[in-house]
Image (tube, rainbow, N blue to C red; front, side):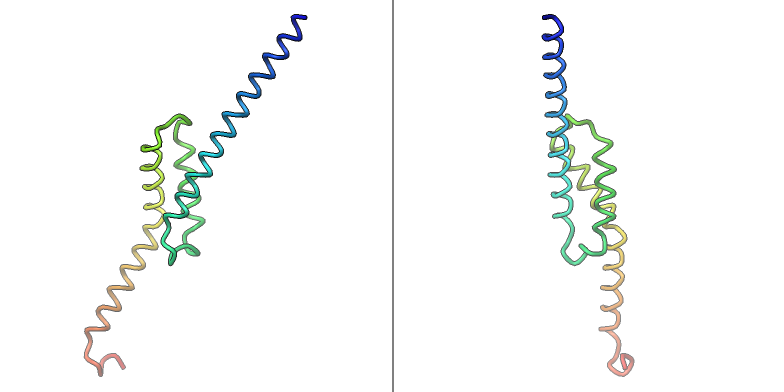
Length: 109
């Protein structure tokens, strides 16, 4: 009879562990969705892989019990870092277009 009780306890521990893992994976998926939704639509095709990789690395460094407010800040920072090259490219393009717009009409030809 003792072995039946032990088996039940082991099963309970495994079930609890599975529930915690499932909860953790659900939270990771929610934060990943939050991160991907943070990407400007114009940048989506160019930076989605970089954002996913950066956020995945950031989330893997957090404790599973981390407060949502801290997790949000870490995810936002990871997205910002992944977007940095794209943002810089956009700034350069805007500067070039602005400079071209200021040229005399004859110089633009």
